[in-house]
Image (cartoon, helix red, strand yellow):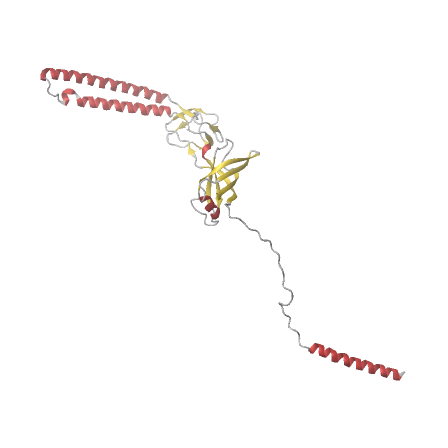
Length: 301
């Protein structure tokens, strides 16, 4: 038994030594350099499509807000006490072109017109008298002096010129008084809406003072900010197609529009410019402050 154990230990020792020699040779063998380019080349498949050159239409969308180009101050041109105010001439009220929005007591202006009508009548009478006296004076001159030219004083030329000037002044004063009388009725040439009103029956109004503010329906437009490239596209087209979409009073409407004015300057922080779009026909229910979407079909590039 002891002899068998000796053989077994000898075999294990020889095996261990042999394994160590083989292992040391494997580890000591120079490493083979790996070629990163070795191997099959990769194959890529692509599709090729040919495009023909043709016009391309620039299109872009932006958002904007409805605003009035300007507002009008309600300023009476004559002074007096208010005798009538239109039922709609209050904040948010609408009015039509030519409607009487309020009236100022007119009796003083009517009396002034009558007085000046009398002045005109007297001036016409004075002119007629000078013309008659001039003809009589000339007749007497020619009777005594034959065909000799009559002096201006004999022909009453200075008096006639003065009478004509007095008539013209009287007629001008009358015309001015008639205008003041007409202005006791306050009207506006276009339909619009009242932003602010401070006029009531019985109130005394002073000529030249502001008592309210309105805007005309036709002055409504859309202001929108767009970047420099979009401004460039717009500048290349004389009449780009514009559609303005609004959601207001529970309904959505798309209206045709047009570019009205380009940007006058750029915002220093955003580098955006404000452009203005006009409506082809402004709807009656549109008011300033409504947000809209603007679709612009630009030029063919």
